[in-house]
Length: 162
Length: 205
Image 1 (cartoon, each protein chain N blue to C red):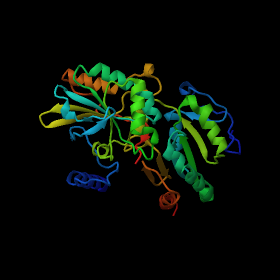
Image 2: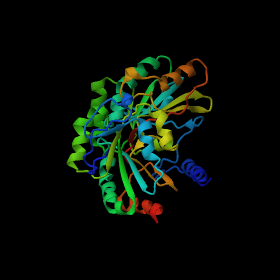
Image 3: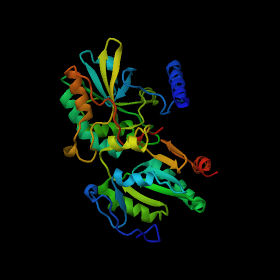
Image 4: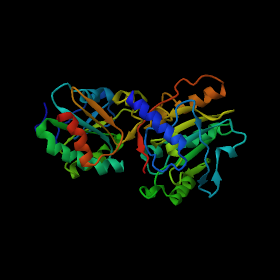
């Protein structure tokens, strides 16, 4: 049961054994819980950005992902913002940030400390630096360990939707 | 494979170029078994430090780290502990701050001095002025560890990656990657995990 307004999700906690902070305003996953979002087999193209409120280059490019979501949601594109904020800061920093910036893209939090096990599953070439982004659909997948401008994002996305 | 070829070319360019101003790419950098470059970088006390200064060392725990990255901060105490544990066994910690301080004023030389003093760093905390060293190593984030062993060929890269497998809670760590690697070297054994990964803050250019 998902609320129609993505910005105001109901309390949802996946994989309760792994969840260390529970919030009413945030979906929190371990990697196993997140993995389906990285492997959707429907007709959409997904732009998945790994970020955190404490990561300056992430915050700089976040508006471009929001803009992309706004401009391309009619073209079967969905932006997912995966926050790597620390659990103790979900209430203090992440949720206030989501509200203050009125983020429209889907935001989820990934809390899984055993990074060496899941980073290579996201992408074999990822050294672990953020920001990092995946663009994929059922036919094609690219991984980017870099920052983006809006135009650069559009250029990449077009290779998936045209 | 195209990417491999590109990687090779990039590495070749890196090796050949001495000026070396444009390579901030993730593509270069060391693999296990490569010989790591020495350097002469300024320590927080103003003195220049090189690996060659350490005549008695068996190797080095080189850690690219900084003041401002929350992951680096969470690992500070563990970095201090690594140095205390292994300095006398021949593997001192050498910390290098790789960020562009214009972009991250919180990592300025003065800020580094302050942080080192307040935390009581017992190891050199060097600034990669001009950002020429970290791209040669291939560091992409902080913290990022390169364990080196002195060999006849030079300082050979033995381990690359994370300090351990739980950034959040030192008491919940299952595998201490760096300690296990140094212990293996001390015992003359093969290092089990030579490369690991962790989330970190991208190095600011």
